[in-house]
Length: 219
Image 1 (cartoon, one colour):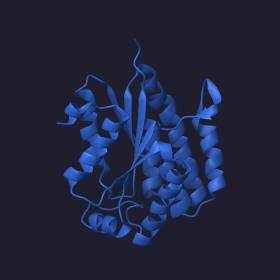
Image 2 (cartoon, helix red, strand yellow):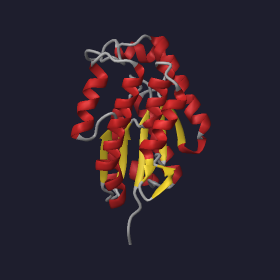
Image 3 (spheres, one colour):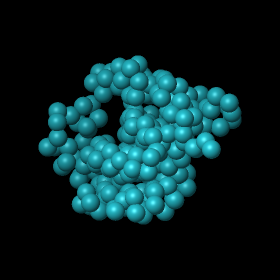
């Protein structure tokens, strides 16, 4: 019997603390014998990683930034995500299209209708052009912008996004809220302003409630 692939994205402003919980979730699925593909955006392929370096470090206007994000996404879908889902993998992706709408659309103030058109072009399913590839679940780590700014102040040398002021991240958070409002069934909102263990408890419970992890797998 074939195993159905599962596509999960993880979203949140910089400093929200996604990375640790993505790794823990991968381990939980692997303990059940599932193959896990861990990936990220922008990035995930040699080409997309090159585009990531440009986006994070080189000055450019918002349209150029958006085009590079979607170019990286197209290669990522073709080379990594679609083949992994076809194999029946659990795909855990650190950011996907919601981040583009939140950062470029709301943070940068770029035209949302242009982003929507790019989304249509880039994410159509090869065998069903009328449907878009979207995550089966998006876990949104919701964190107050000021808390994120405090966390980032002690982090590594910031990139072009991490160095933005708290007001920028407030706009990004608003973008995530709007994306969740437009597609609530796809989102699970996690309050990330908690101790790490409590955040993981809440993340784990989302997957238990979905029936994707049994309670004992997280003991």
